[in-house]
Image (tube, rainbow over all chains, first blue to last red; front, side, top):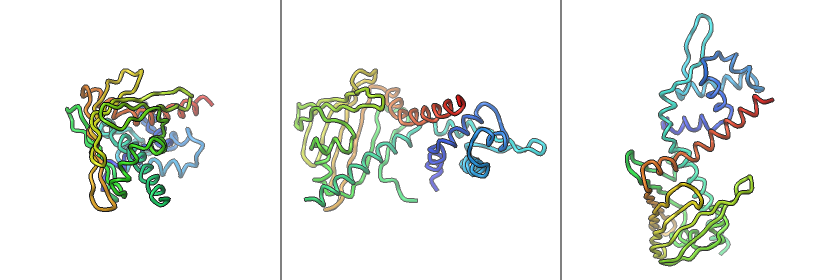
Amino acid sequence: MNLRRDVFQAIADPTRRAILMLVASQAMTAGAIAANFDTARPTVSKHLQILTECELLSQHQNGREIYYHLNPQKMREIADFIEPFRQFWDDRFNKLEAIMKTYQANQ
Amino acid sequence: MVQPKTNVHAEDGKQELLITREFDLPIELLFKAYVVPEIVEQWMGTKVLKLENHAHGGYQFETTDPRGHAHRFSGVIHEFVPNQKITRTFEMENTPFAVQLEFLEFEKLTETTSKLTMHIVFKSIAYRNQLLQMPFAMGINLAHNRLQAFFAN
């Protein structure tokens, strides 16, 4: 499995990026995070699960509560940011391919 | 997982990068996408102000951002060999980015497939890394703006 790609898929979602920015300032419980969004609580839980699975967030038990922390090491790993650049060119080349296929069909 | 079609190779500590892509297109059609202005405009999403497809020719493209500002990109063509290669410079006009050198190689794989290799050389490692980070920075800015708008409500 290409973990790197999954991380970028994880941060491609605006709600998940917003969650990362929230948690960046302080560790928070799922309830406190969800209170910042209009989306249903289970939707926020799903986002938290994805972010935890690709290790952008880590969970720590504190008494009865589970707190979500940002994993700075993982954030640094994506700090060379090549994937969005690759996707930019991939989109462009996909367009080129589609346009030329239409062009070919019309000849 | 499907192998991505476009690959970017940027070695640490080098002021160059390599973009490779295999196309489901005969080499002639791939090359045509780089030389016919109307086609370039479609896939690059730019206006083509000038495109002189020969050695010592020049090109100039223009894009308009969502706020209506025009940005021009231009360069000089050094080598032009149909269905084989284009060597050119690339510059974003009126920006602090230094001009870059691009080697585009077009390769026939089969009758119906082809490969493009873009070898880009930058003035410095710092410039290369800055350019690589631009799409990511744009994504983060978008997220940040949305978050600010969200808290402003």
